[in-house]
Image 1 (cartoon, rainbow, N blue to C red):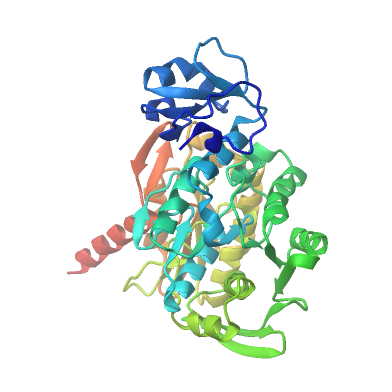
Image 2: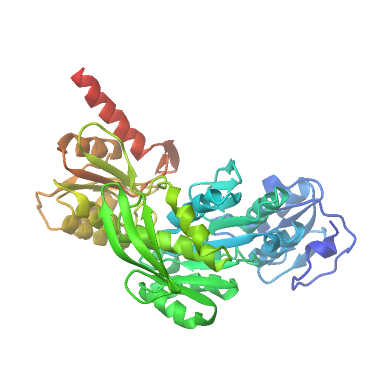
Length: 483
């Protein structure tokens, strides 16, 4: 592609050879090949401007910079190289989202569940789809592993380009506040944007809830249509701001999509969905009001994107549970063991409340908090677990470079001193095993914080670890003892 076409739409300073042929794009100097543009991005830990010489050595023929460099290579200077990367990527891949019906989901909790529910429903209607999110990225049936909730703009446009090449017309993606803050979705065409809720998370990055909300708001400025949870106070504010192009959803208030007559059983939850003047009976394999909202969001987004409501309702009849979201660990001990990704105060409150609603015996909570992340939520989560669960085991999550004992100390500031209902077991494997050891038939164990993750980060080392696998291995050992 000609350079002039690749940089179309950029505001820049510098002279360019319009006919220069560009073969690829990179913002990591190690990935530069012959004929590439290198976009120098100033990151939090590494500055791409320091690697311009390495990029040239690897074959870069053109450089995009934010600050002056000492080099003879052709370059342009821009105000924001992240936005420039997004536009360059969009141009190079010929604006792939223009031909895809894309639903973006943002909010603190529920993003992953909603994207998987939507993908399931699309499959039930025989629509092949793409998915981008926390657990994995999917191009039809092809699975691409992911390292972040929302990839960088270059990887995003490449993924969407591959979807287009396979004639995929529908896609759904999680849109994180970090991605919005860092312009990763700049230039992406969203047909529908969903807002789930906003509760405390990522304040180590955003500093306060005002900043956090303002980053989320960006998605609704660019999406053609919006679907907003008006049960959430931030959602209500957002709906009032974008009401002319928005649908609302709720389980508490009058809304475009309203769930009522909610009934929960051991096998899932049923409810009545009201849309316009129609009433539709829905049955799902999920538990709790929060998952009712997730299903309603999935239904509403597909209707907002142009799918007939009757087809969408029919597609709910065979949706599957979501990996790591109140995922049941099968056992013959008579114990309910559920693994969930809940890692914020609101999410922990939700999953424990759901567990409480169907537990005949004791509710046992096992959780920790991540290191190098928002410290202010730690005591709040301790207090929530103590108030809702009958017994709490506080353990490690992904401590990263923090001392696990100090993280646990922060959590303990939110609970009563010398409580007989609180135990501290810093080793997560031992904590999970202990919860199963002390549980009796009729009890429920909720192992929260890591959900689908198959790793644990201690220091800077990432090792294999799965809450589900640890629980299943311990249960197998107990069953072997009986033989």
